[in-house]
Image 1 (cartoon, rainbow, N blue to C red):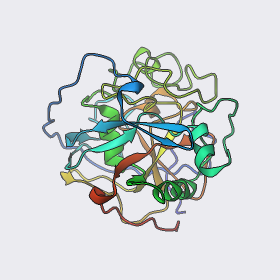
Image 2 (cartoon, one colour; image 1 turned 135 degrees about the vertical axis):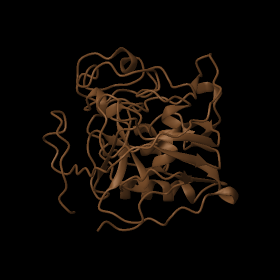
Image 3 (cartoon, helix red, strand yellow; image 1 turned 60 degrees about the vertical axis):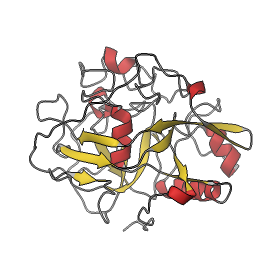
Length: 297
């Protein structure tokens, strides 16, 4: 992996494999408005699938357009978050929570996680390649196809129609002191007790998705690469690279690294105790033709 500038952040200062690349300028674009329900969604309101007794609850994410990245005035912003308009032409179903240890065990028969003791804890310490094996096992059965979200799909779903740093509002704390808007929705270094927590305990975003900002970072399908300010339609990320995108912040992260726009990458062959994933479910007949997984460079 090529050496790149390490993020200067006390929470990430001891992580040897994080490599961050930064890019240039910002362009202001129009944001499409979204209507959302004022009622707090429930896990029970979403379609579910069953795997060996483990329930997978999904939330429908509609097609639409949004501004990906962050404005230059956003507190905690990094240079690789260039704003650009993204249009997603197809809706999809996204798992309402990160994949749990119970579901991983039902599919894989093992539990690689560091923090154990509750099947509702998110699975972690799984590499991108291990996630692909998990997906392949799911996809051998039934009429649905499962995959990782693209980075654009992930941020669109995380924002749920919002443009603020958190889906629940503005950012008030950059590091590990209490941030009320983040505290309501996520587990981070300010409230986690330095470990992962059972999924679905905090408030969901407006589309009914839990733990998008904190608890565990989440693998995306994409190779990490620089943004441009050009508008994109159904982007699939860089054509190649040295790391796969991880999103969302974790129990280990400070507040600024849990923002909707915050992005990192990680070696696809490595896992970490703060790194998990969630699933996209789509019909096999209507599946997007995503790029085939590539081996690490």
